[in-house]
Length: 353
Ligand SMILES: [Zn+2]
Image (cartoon, rainbow, N blue to C red):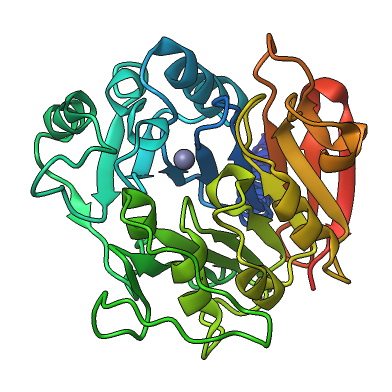
C-alpha cells in the first residue's frame, strides 16, 4: 500500500515534469522562429509574402487578374508557409500587375485587413476600372490608407525580437516632405532628373521592414525622380540587406542615387520573361562594391546572358515555367539569412550587414 502511494506520487511528479518540459520546449520553439519572405512568381507582377516569427502574415501585392497568380500565391501561403489566412494585404498602387489578383485570391484564402495609398478619385488611363471595382467589392470598402511614417501593426511579444514595417513613401510623398510637389535635388555630380512620371507608379507604397539588424526595402514601382527624393538630400531609407529591385528592374526606375544609398548586399528582381531586369539596372546593381548576389524570378529572354544574373540565381529559366518562388529566411537572431530556390535545391547564406 505504502509502496503504491509512493509510486503514484512519483508518477504524478514525472508527469508534471514531462508537462513542464514539453511546455518549455514549445515556448522555446515558438521564440526560435525567424522571419520568412517569399517572392512569388507572378510573371512580372509583384507578390511578396512576409511571415513573422509569430506566424502573422503580410502580403504586398497580388499579381495580375485571373486564377494563375492567385493560385500561386495561395499555394505558397497555404501549402508552403502553412497559413490559414492573410492577416494584412498591402496594395502598393493601382496597376493591374499589383491589384489585379486580389479578388481571385480572396476566394482562395481569407484576407483580414487591406491597405493602399487611397482609392483614386478618377480612373486614370493607366488604371482599369474593373480592377479598382473588384478591389472595392472584395474589401467591402474597408481599407486603410497608408501615409509616409505609418507603421503596419504586427504582433510582437516583449521578449521577442524587434520587428517593424514602416511606410517611407506613399501617394507620391516621401517621409519628411510636406507635400507631393516635385522637388528634385541633385544627387551627386552626374545626376539627371527624368521627365515627371504622371503614372500611378509614383504613388507606390514603399516599405522598410526591420527585423532586429536585418533590413529589407520593397519600393514597389517607384520611379526615378521620387527615388531621388528618397536618397537626397537625406537618405530616408538608410542602408539595407536586401532590396526588392524597384519596378521589376526596369530602367525608368532604379536611380543609381537610391540604389547606392540603399547599398544592398542581396538584390531580388521580380521580373517576368519579357518584363523587367533591364540593362541599366544591372549596370547599377553590379557597380555596388558590396553586392553579393542578384536574384531574378525570371530570366529576361529578350536579352543575352550579359544582362541576366548567373544561372544559379534565376528561379525560372523558361517562358513556360513552373512558377518557382524564391524564399528568404532570416534566422531568429537576425544575424544571417538564407536565400533559396526550393525546387532547384539552391540555398545560400548571407550575413546581415
Ligand atoms: Zn508593376
